[in-house]
View 1 (cartoon, rainbow, N blue to C red):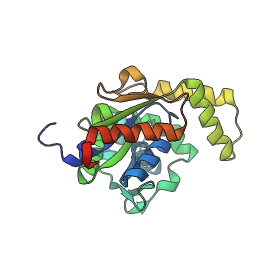
View 2 (cartoon, rainbow, N blue to C red):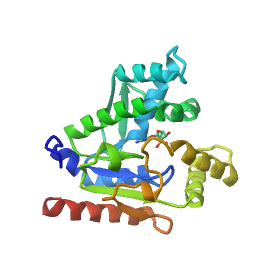
View 3 (spheres, protein in one colour):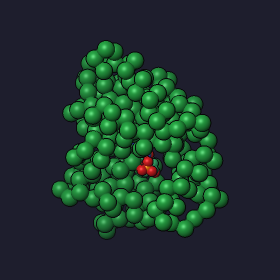
View 4 (cartoon, protein in one colour):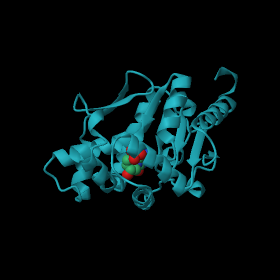
Length: 236
Ligand code: DC
């Protein structure tokens, strides 16, 4: 571990995987079991997208978006460990981050490498304050490289689309399997740039790869917690 990596980063849990692989649901349950905050890094990219959409800048102007992101007053806080809240300019904007407008534009923002550099820096800063369970696409490979516990959740495209379809129908949206499958493939394509790990061969070398196709959530959570205990010794 580099001398400047605090123990809170080493003790944090890094969870990576493609869209709809179960990172959030597993991350929340692991955070609850360990009583540490669940840090959904996707929310940060979404908050930057919201800020860009609110401003007058052209969201395709990478230099302007980068400058705006660098100046943002953005933080993540927890009331409950399982419930990360994004605070932008002193206001909790979490309920706005799944709006269709944000959903449509977030990949334009998350593909900008300077934006990624800035958010990686901020994510490391927050994990230096206290250990977290952090989920994203580059956590084990870039953000929390020194974390002892890294998992990569893998699942076939069809299974991920089926899970996403269930969520969409539950939240009252009209859709079907083919539409969700197409959207899942498209999201994978958009996310497959800029050092992101969305395929198992892109996972960190020291990550435990969990194939979740045939597993229930509880089993994935249990494997992750077992791995955490094994990596952190008797004090875990
Ligand atoms: O996980 P999500 O759907 O909330 O992520 C939103 C967007 O942010 C998506 O384009 C992927 C991107 N993202 C990323 O590039 N790196 C992360 N660590 C987390 C999310």
